[in-house]
Figure 1 (cartoon, rainbow, N blue to C red):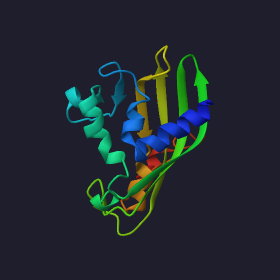
Figure 2 (cartoon, rainbow, N blue to C red):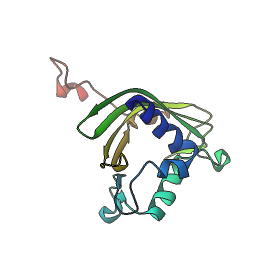
Figure 3 (cartoon, rainbow, N blue to C red):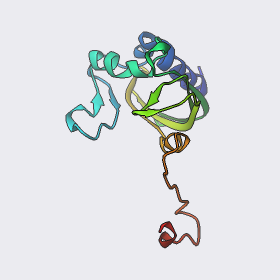
Figure 4 (tube, rainbow, N blue to C red):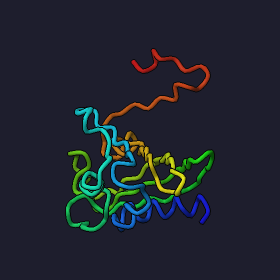
Amino acid sequence: MTNLEFAKKWAETRHNDLSAHRELYAGAEEFCIETRMVVDHLGDTISTDSEFTEQLAIFTNKDPENGLGVQSVTVTEAFEGNGHLFFHWDWQVEGADTYRGFPVEGKTLVSKGSTFLEFNDDGKIILDSSFVNENPVFQQLGLPLITPHYWEEGFDPASLG
């Protein structure tokens, strides 16, 4: 299996078969999935089987009638190196009622994300760090987020007002 194929399998199982997704990871308490919960530092990672099932359930499409919609991840490129895999993906949500408490009003939400995986010697995931860029999603929902290209030459912070 190529790295791109593995990344696509990761994406497919994440949303459609959580049991198969769990099989990609090392044994219980031998892996860590960073979820970046800001409110409770003690709960900012997933590192047990029960946490895996409970906290990743929101990413599954098992019950699209739950108001969360149908999510899809399309892997666009993958990079391997030194027991690690990094890949970019396009993310889409259709049929959601709300997103993070904001009404979706029938919109299909799209953004981009990336995942960094570290593997043990058996080829099982021991670290998963995945992020979706939510700013475009909030902009699609009508929130007035400013996303300046501050890295571009000549950018003036005062222009933000």
